[in-house]
Image 1 (cartoon, rainbow, N blue to C red):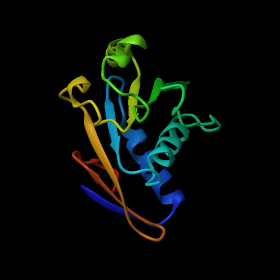
Image 2 (tube, rainbow, N blue to C red):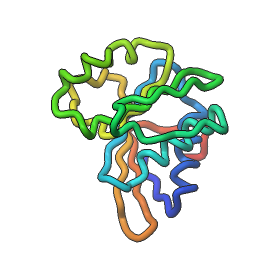
Image 3 (spheres, rainbow, N blue to C red):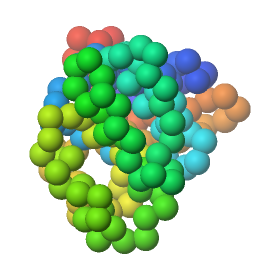
Image 4 (cartoon, rainbow, N blue to C red):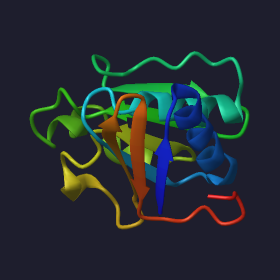
Length: 144
């Protein structure tokens, strides 16, 4: 699936559409250069489930947990990690088997830790105010 967005609001709206059909146990690996919309996607995703939650980048904390009304959302950022073994220190495996949804920025840095059911979303800057978003899954019934 391929989508082009031309604003922050459109990127957030795409995150909201993904959230509307998301289920506990799912994992979304978000890939793309800095400034391509990964965190804005997460903001749209989380706010679709529970409006009013403030989403901050977990660049320095590695993971932020948002306790939404439907399920916990675990928002990871692998950017500052040097090795997959660092994920053991935060109990990454427990997040994968928990009752929440994992959203991982820079999610393909350590492909060996991703489960086979991981959903990949790639963000790419294609010009001023334009982003291309490519997914390895379809959103049935959402118009995308």
